[in-house]
Length: 553
Image (tube, rainbow, N blue to C red; front, top):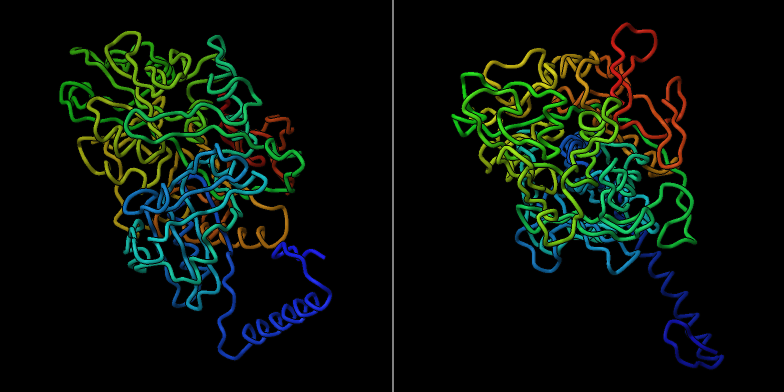
């Protein structure tokens, strides 16, 4: 007979010996496992990937509310100080050897016994969705340097103390190569699937239903979207949210659900280092309208006149995100592409994104005005490299105190109202500066982001998690979401909690849902399950509450 473990021939007597040895090994292992004082196995409670908007708050919640007394934590940047892997922490998609790994910032939290662990890799919403929905799901890979010591201290010690110097061996072994359990996303999975499909569809310069990063909607691996500032890339890779996997067509996508976490606004930010340009104090730039945003980000006219400024007229440099970004899609469908201008897009005048051309990486003069359009990959690069280092530049991002910390509280940078409505405060600050947070920076429940709460500010999205519809992953992810919402007002108030919690009334408006990626829309009211897309959907009050119907779809 053939012993499959060793692929050698054995006789019947040898087979008996092998079986006895195997059984004896099981017994020995059982004795070791249950011996007094033996360490229990380490369980991965939640392994999330996706949007940076929830990264910090989720880490604090896991450490503070779930891991118990004596819990520890560790953070590491996606790149820097690691040599074994391309990134210190990365997602590995095993469905094809041609799929590039996706690096990102990682936090890890574990309990004092090192038997429970939570982790979250910050990538982007569409990548986070792909990692969760892929069959098999993507795996987290952590460079061995993290086990020997390469802590990043990426979250303020004022919020949770200093990082451990390294990840303990038991925690590292449990987490390294573990499969993602949860997607953290600032757009619904249906909208993430739509963004992927639109990006790889054939370029359509009439209505921008396709952006040219592939040969059609069924492209498995599209053309990389390259950064104008670094070697960073965004990789359009196919995934399905129902039916079977596009790579492994025999593997079905399991039943899933979403849990709403909170709502966060998109903000427009500017570099004001040029006192004659966007930094002028006479006729200061404090607002951007829909039409102005469409003119500038569409590459038509990029100068201060297009932003409503007078003499002198100065070129404005535009920094925009990759089309498979949740941030880009939220801005695309709440500002640039609406019911009044259904064929408009910030991808206008980019052209066929052939790598090595001015279209990819995007670094291209606008049609007029003298400004240049640049592509940034990720929120961190857009803010901390793009806007921070480019004179008279304008970009956009989901607001969080962590996201804007490098440019907050400085007269050299600022943020704008959108159609004369402030995204963060009741009224726009006279200095136009971004607010700072010396953590913790609590707010009274119900007071954060007043114009998002009252339905007047238009550019926002609900932050969500996608996870299994039932079972252990649903239970542990639900517990983490509840902890995030319980802490949000008392630590760093990055968004409006979705549900009423701790005296906060929660979000009283929703974005109307519609059929997207073949899934019919359901608003999820009255206990129903949410479904369909909602990016750019109409803003409507929950229940009979008075208010606005802000319909920009």
